[in-house]
Image 1 (cartoon, rainbow, N blue to C red):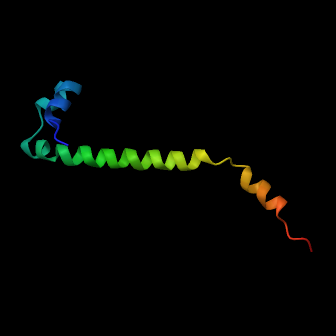
Image 2 (image 1 turned 60 degrees about the vertical axis):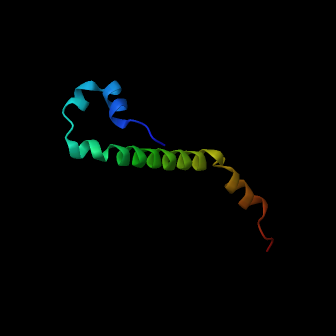
Image 3 (image 1 turned 180 degrees about the horizontal axis):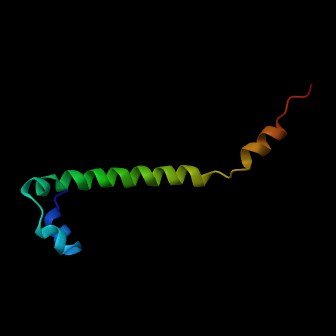
Length: 68
């Protein structure tokens, strides 16, 4: 995956890219990779929480009660 991160930032927000230090420019790929990881994690969490119906577990407990 070889994209010109500096060019991307310049196109998104030119006023920011103008005053990036060399050190910050070197950190751009790492920041982009970290951001992708965070987004991926967030998507997984939302998928996991929205897939289940909240009432289903309650109903299951009621149906499978052991008779005394």
